[in-house]
Length: 119
Image (cartoon, rainbow, N blue to C red):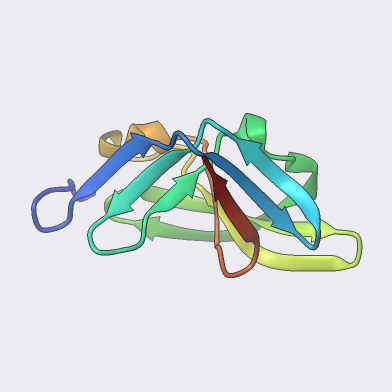
């Protein structure tokens, strides 16, 4: 486990905007409760509460990754009718203490879904 610091900063803030996520014309998530994680020089990532995600569109996979700063990530695929994309959603169910706020929130790879932000 690594601790965020000056060489690898991580900040988490509430995102006051409405975030929607769609796939194949179907809305999968709609929230005003997203949190925005900024990590080092990477683009910011919106993490969405599970309560604001249509979990029936997601299917848990065996895929996992480990981030030394955030912990172990579990993945979901999106399956809607004959449309599917694998491992497009990730979540940290037990993140490291420094990023506890993202616990059980979901994030989506934006290149595979339509992610919109509105005021």
